[in-house]
Each structure stands twice: as C-alpha cells, then as structure tokens.
Image 1 (tube, rainbow, N blue to C red):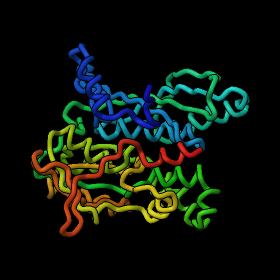
Image 2: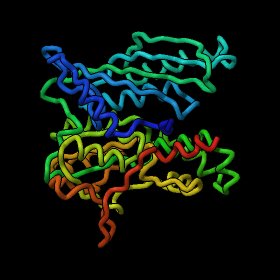
Image 3: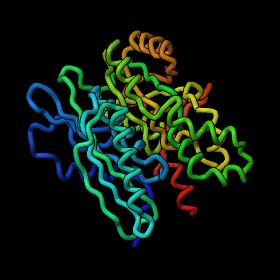
Length: 339
C-alpha cells in the first residue's frame, strides 16, 4: 500500500472528490473548490463566508496564529471576519491546566485584536499527538455587491502581490529550527528578524484588503498558503480559467526568507506564504492601490498579467520563459519529514 505524503492532498484528487459530491443546497454560492479560500452561502440580504484551517507546522503562538490564517481566508472574499470556533487537540502527557489556560488566553487576546467573537469549539486531550493542534473555523459576512472570489480574474488584469514571500514559511523555520539554522551558519540577527515577520510586516492581510476594496474593483484575491506563491498562482489561474504571465524578478522574496530557505535547500516560491496577498484588477486600478498601500507602508508589487488560458501559467525571467514550477508538497514539509 502506498501512503500519501505530508501536506495537502493533490489538487486533482481533491477536485475529483468535490465533483463527485457537489453541494445540493441552492444557497451555496461558492462550495468546495480548489483555489477558492472560503465557502459562500446566501443568507438573503448578504453572504455568509465560512472557512476552516488547522495549525500543524507551528507550535508557538498557535492560538494567535489560528485566528490570523482563518481571518485571511475570509478577508480575501472581501468579507469581514466576525465569529470564530476553535477545536483544540492537545497531546497526552504534555498538557497541564496552566498550558490550557494560556492557550485560551491567547485565543481571546487574538479575537480582541481582530474584533472577532469566540463563539464555540471543542477541546480534548488526544492520544498520539506530539504537539498541540488548533483547528479554526472563521465566519464572516459581506454585502452581495462586494464579494470577491479567486475565480474572478479577467484577461488583461494586472497581478499584484503584497509584502513578499515566503513570509509565513520564514517565520516557521526561524521559530521551529533555530538551532539547526545557527549550526548552518545563519546569524542570530537574521533568525530574529525572520521570527518577527509574523508581526512585522505581519501575517494578517486585512489592512491591505480593506484599503484595496475601498479604492478599486478587485476582480480576484487569493491567500497563498501551502505550496507557496507558485501554487497560489496556479490555483488562481485554474479557478478563473485563465493563464498568467509572471515576471520572476518582480516577485519579492524577503531577504530573511531567501537566507533561511537556502540554508535548507528549499525553493522560496514553493514555501508556505501566508501574509502575502494576491490580487488581480484592472491595470489603472492596480496603480492606484499600489500607491495607496505604499502610503500605509505596505509593500505591493506588480508581478505580471492575466492572459488567455491557452498561454498557460508561465514564469518569465529575462528572455527565458518556462511553466510555473509545480510543488506537490510544500517545501517546508521537507524539514518535518527529516525529524
């Protein structure tokens, strides 16, 4: 028997399952679909947006972490995160009452930070775990005229990326593999800066989403997570039925991310990249948004354009043009497979 590797299931496998079992409720506007970040349900005067995401790689600040990544998936719908549920699976023999209280304190503080209500969930000590796992569910709402999907990209759109990559990946590597990084010659200053990326420039994409949606008609947004920016670009193209032409040199790879990935032989383009935001919109609108975000000290870069589907998803570097690299697993899983 061949067992599946660590990480998300392959997109083709998932989509085949989704196609076999489509939602039957006509109120489901967007159901399970590869590339789409959250479900959308028609509640009459507005849409309810729902998503769920676990925290499995990180161990530090996992309560705060769970709020951020789930809020991002709701935000890229153009929606406001409102209500959060948390399932806490805690390791047998390693969990104390004090550690549970700390985790709940962290969850409540994170909810207050995002003005989100913690409305339920489940907590248990689970057999067979070596670390805590938090599985979050975030609910939000959006006016029907303001809904944004991953599949809304249009031919001719500009493709823009905020902050840089792999923001989340660099922070996880710095937090989980600090001793190994030091042994491989990475300076304490770089490790410290990478750890701090979760707060500066920050894992949350809510600030840039709010500014962009206020100033322009955003055709598509996507939250790059496992598989990195490369996988996110392919997912966006597949969801919209378009092609993409991406300039490799315009993708901002954070300096700390580059150093940490090089230390372990990882490709930054395939390393988990939450904290960055992908958007497509008309070129003139893109210029307006990029300048507005710059005034708020949020980096935003034009990285390519949406083209016909027949042209595929290509990565251009100078005169060289090649298909976007495919990562069947997130690059960061290589670090956890070694342990």
